[in-house]
Amino acid sequence: MVTAIYIAGRGRVGAALVRHFGRQAVPCRVLKRGWEKRPPRRGVLFLAVPDAAVERICREVFPTTPKGLTLVHFAGGLPISRERTHLLHPFASMGPESEFGRLWCLWHGPADGGFERFLNTHHFHVIRRDPIPGPGYHVAAVLAGNFPQYLFLAARDLLRREGFSDDDSKRLLVQLVETSVLGVREGGVGALTGPAARGDRAVMEREIVFLGKTAPRLAVLYRALSELIAQAVGHGKILD
Ligand SMILES: NC(=O)c1ccc[n+]([C@@H]2O[C@H](COP(=O)([O-])OP(=O)(O)OC[C@H]3O[C@@H](n4cnc5c(N)ncnc54)[C@H](OP(=O)(O)O)[C@@H]3O)[C@@H](O)[C@H]2O)c1
Image (cartoon, rainbow, N blue to C red; front, side, top):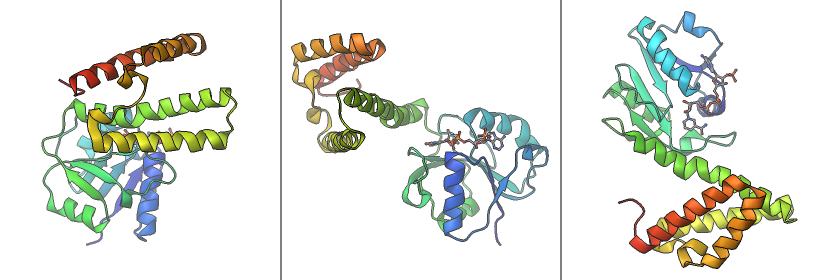
């Protein structure tokens, strides 16, 4: 039987879903705002909407939906665990180039062979977790995915202020991020580099003074992270 596919939200994740089903020539319908008044009767409804809307829909709309409708949301930070509702969390930063077919997603939801076949048939790559992971799961995603994005852009601004072109800044920073991630991926704490890992206090203090004048809140972050790195190198581990 062909499953009807509905998508609410056409932001980063919604657009990636539309591309994903489009590539497979699988029809899907993007719902117009206000769909909640008349939710679909059966099939799979993807909630590619902000987390607050997911919570509201699960609380207010879910009870009015018929049993033939399966809900899928992507909010990895929400501890929702209930019938007919699945979390499909792409452990990735989604953008215009993202392809679900190339990404690993965490899947949490009721053991449902039909839905599992749906995921396989439509080329979603999943790691199933039951029970739902604790808050550390999403914090890990923020630490590894979102904070580096901000720091990358802050570093790019600093390079620009030092007179580097956009192209050169991008080239240098991408190289640095890739070599840094590769280093710790293989070598763990022992592969941490930089002044804090080496114990170069004079360099650190000079850079904190510079940042204190340029971007004082980043200076606070620089000092705090440097202290954590020095401690990690001393103990040979990050978390106790
Ligand atoms: N982006 C990521 O990297 C990423 C990664 C993993 C998980 N997620 C999760 O994926 C979900 C969607 O995130 P996103 O980044 O795609 O958000 P987004 O880019 O901000 O897009 C959200 C979309 O939902 C629409 N929307 C809001 N309420 C709606 C409703 N009631 N019905 C229909 N459409 C509605 C918004 O429309 P308007 O623009 O008109 O408001 C917008 O198009 C979130 O739960 C998020 O936690 C995102």
